[in-house]
Length: 383
Ligand code: NZQ
Ligand code: ZN
Image (cartoon, rainbow, N blue to C red; front, side):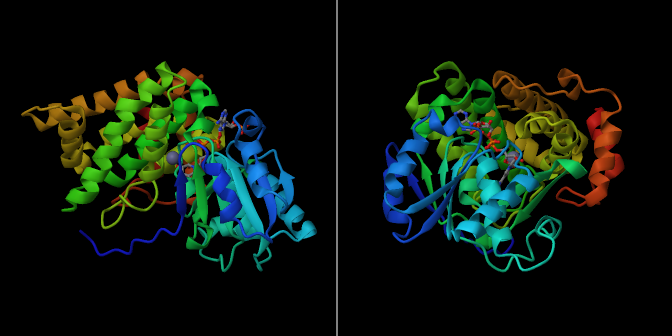
């Protein structure tokens, strides 16, 4: 295991009715920007409960954050904050709204000329940020308890990520009740995204890190057990609660400590969304099995361990164990009603080249060995 620092300052408040705690968590004199997306928050109770808990504080609303949040929209929110002299941001929604708020919080206090450089410098030029609290409505990204954000810029066909300890949410409200209104597509997206987050931190090479491995395997097993139940019994609170906690723990800086990380599925997935507009998790379900196949010699030991411990695959032949484990993952994605091929979205044969070219605009090499480059991406997507 490598040396590490474990840091996570986000206070999680979990359970039915937990939004009432906002009244204690936000300073009484705070001037709040309340940010949300296209309106789902008005149907699941999260908006009403948040407004109630904010009481007499000054609140200005900013709605219309898109899935895959748009840079230009975020800049409009920055103007609203400056105009109204606001000093606290509440993100009400999923990863897109939370990520947008992390960018807005940084861009508002950014002294440089070009706020897009926050993305191109991966967040290293962030010196200060407004405080953020979140009310989560879709378990998926882990953004509610991590320092990451992903912002899209449609005009330049870019989707880039940044991270900074300054944008960890101060608190996050996790009330599974709010997730009961999710449409099937977003239930599937959330479970698959969380599953792939664990895989990016787990499925590399052995690192003599049994705690991290078993944390990771417990999250994967939980998602495999609970995910399909959420699609079947749409009003099962207990199932949603388990998925919500699993998704947060999947990407909150815990299971990655001391071990190598991959993130090539996400790197390629973000390019697919930038070029073709697919949902984030839809891209991951296409890319992950192909990466595992392409990199099966380097990842073999961990794939076999995953097969044995999570899917109960016990094969003498390493080759067969790897094949069966990758098949089991594809089967799970299908059970979650996910497509696993670009062609199933009507995307043509020229896609691998286009996606790889878009990747090469901002990146050179990805993967735990930094050896997946432009031409590898073409090969991976053509598998
Ligand atoms: O806009 P509204 O009307 O709110 O509808 C949203 C949106 O259309 C809807 N929704 C959310 N909660 C709902 C609901 N509908 C009914 N009931 C509810 N309770 O769901 C749609 C998708 O929302 P979005 O926030 O886009 O989903 P998700 O949480 O999957 O976020 C995806 C974004 O996060 C980024 C992705 O790239 C993508 O941009 N990621 C962020 C990460 C991070 N910050 O750590 C890591 C991830 O790997 C990912 O890259
Ligand atoms: Zn993801």
